[in-house]
Image (cartoon, rainbow, N blue to C red; front, side, top):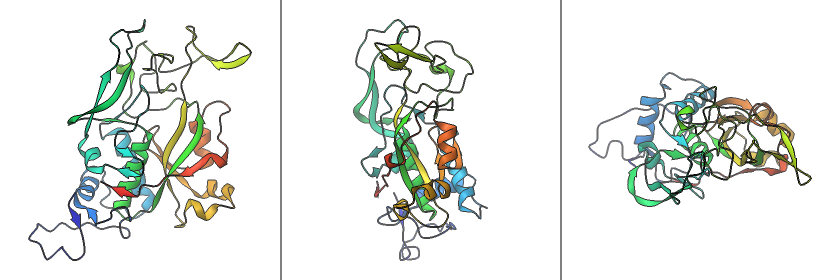
Length: 295
């Protein structure tokens, strides 16, 4: 990306663009915030006249969920633009990656599904994401404006309530399901999971254990973990609440561009709205996995 630094604005013969930020850009822009990131934000997300960080976070999250043109990996939930703690911002903005979705079997199941995986390839148009990518994207782009956020990982997330999964609607159905634009079975394209985008079956005993299965004894899928963007208006961090996680749940605001979208609920409200059944995670299973490098 093109880095903007205080000492190069007037030393290089480049067109002058003025961007008003809340504070200094986040530290993961190691050599200066990218002009491409700021241009994307001010042209796409309508933040020009915002005066509150929460307002800008809402607009960024809404845009990345509903307008950026990416869609969830309904086969396995594989990240495409996030590798460990690095985020490939330019690839994400352009929706390009050295990846492709490839069938690993040519034999469809009775629902006409084939097993697919994301594999390495030459650079090409690519818009498949998961929660790692979406959580990182909100954090990285808001960080360009000087909004301090964290990437929060919620382990043992469980089954999800009906929600708008980014980019997924009834055009992906293997079995016609209504309503057309919500989902509570995120990996319905996986041949080892139920093909129902909306799963309405209840608990069933199989060999003495509780399962949620459909009429074909195929299980409902859930999130093993889920990643969101977390914002604290008091300028504290997750680690500042090491001895008071209950207060953290009240203070933190959650922004989810993968499912929902969620636009600023506290953590308790968020888990009640997002998680189905009795799978509310143990607070000890919440971790911060911040982006340390933007590529």
